[in-house]
Amino acid sequence: MDILDLIDEIEDIVEAGTSVPLTNKVMVNKDEIIEILREIRIKLPDEIKQAAWIKEERDRIISQAQETAENILNDTQQKLEQMIDKEEVLKIASQRANEIIKKAQLSADEIRNGALDYADELLYETQERLKELIQMLNENRKELKNISEGSHNETK
Image 1: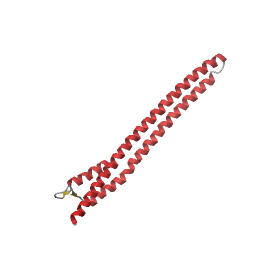
Image 2: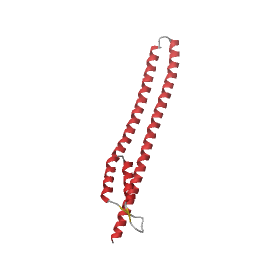
Image 3: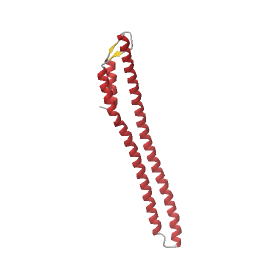
Image 4: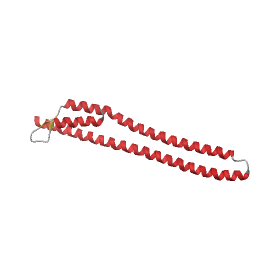
């Protein structure tokens, strides 16, 4: 059961709770709610692990892009060294090598920027999901606190 299911379960318990007449309060089984909250605490690290995985994936993509760029640059360098036989060939080779290096650098920059954008988007989505989960948890805690205060006030 994931965190959202557990939160839905808390909502179901609150909705099914016994209404206190003339108030907006509901009585619920405290132990049942606390048990679900414990499960949520256990599951939260999974969400955090997912965010860590996204960060690792971003780093892997960036590393792969840099490795690709280095390979392109190394290949270009090797081709350049092979072409240095005659002076005229040297000039042509140097011009072509510079063009290839520029293209390789542009390609590497595009790959790197794309990887960064992708990783940033994944991190943003995970961050927003975690914000929603935290907000729901805070609201549920507030409701539980209000219910608890309401039952204390009724016993007086």
